[in-house]
Image (cartoon, rainbow, N blue to C red; front, top):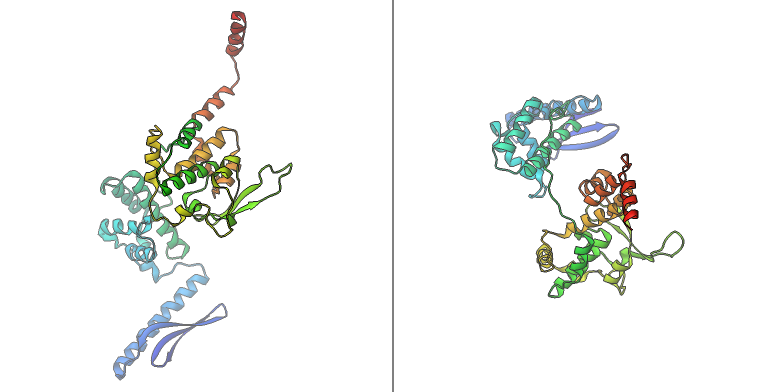
Length: 368
């Protein structure tokens, strides 16, 4: 390993050899024609060389980076948030770090568990944020600190010993079979409305996200041979837009009836939805209201409905996980915790230790 100062065409570079890989790094210094100033610039370049050499050595020996370790939290957070979507929690967390103690001007190496705990209390109690949003921003701080550990800027994550802000349980509705039938019998006006209806009912039979409904092409639907192991001739085989993982989903008769006849492989299955720039959740809300459904539903309700109905009908969670394209079984398990049907079946399956069911059967037989 070596780091040397080089001058090329009056500009200053670091000539770095690391792990037998040779490259140059610009210092952004253009040498002055003045002899005294030029001497000072080369002194500065040598200081940069020494710091860069230290950084490389720390990386090779798994030590913390003494240069970046002096960075402030707000400085590092801004670097990580650069180029991130302005609506992303990480981007928005920067604002609250700036507003917190000393405007976030604390060195990364000086952040303690107590500081993290105080920041979480600030998010919860002094910002007017909901608990859900405060939890997201606290998680973003943890991501920043975790990145600093992985980059060897700090030796340990000070948030490890601090309990995070819990995400409050929310009531996310699902639809019953009876409600699905009511929706199927209720029209939506207009060409886009009609396709919203088709797409939503299709999602209720496949579990696809709206991002995958709008990008679904006929090339994503493959025909398979029907045999003892497969009773469905048409299957979706598609890379999900969100996770970049493939899902394989058989199309039942309901799903197929909503989209046939088949089109060209490059054509969209839902062409009006694919090209529409309209936010269509309001169509679904108005449609549900006309169908006499009081629940506030959206596109994602279809996905939750599929998972819940499958679990209630005895489909194992791992199969549901693969159908929905979840990357973690914990995500699928969320749908199982609040379904009354599953709870009723669970209670009904407990042993009749008091003989109550037997007595009820005898009574019913006697009355007959």
